[in-house]
Length: 203
Image (cartoon, helix red, strand yellow):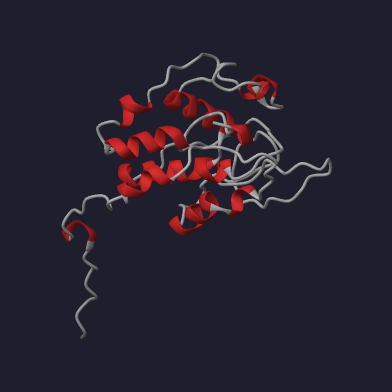
């Protein structure tokens, strides 16, 4: 009789560990801070963040857009205009969605993609997503636990966003990005991440 089929040997444990791919540090000064161009009105999740999330092959059940604050779930969103002339806030996979979209801002531009680029940059060094969450409330809390809770000085007008009363965390958090990531990211990459992961899209 033929021999029983052998159990496939997992190859991953046999591969030598590889360091994180080097980031082109000389290009860091050329990349902008997370700034919105005046009058910009982009398609949000169709840029860097959505493309990166799609290429990554997110695991089954990775949260995506849902109509307003919800439990997450689903795939990537579009960027279509809503009935009132704004843009839908339900774009970009939840783990890469910036604070202004989580809080319901309907007018946005390239800044949403720069936030996503910051998430992907950190993920390259950590080997895992930075803001894993199942709901918008959990996502905004995890973001503020890293970058700090916004104030009217650091992000003017954020308390006027539609979902702020619903999603605001129960407490204020200090900024801890450098404390949490300083040992894992090179100094230049850490500085860039700090600029890309700014709560205020205009900064």
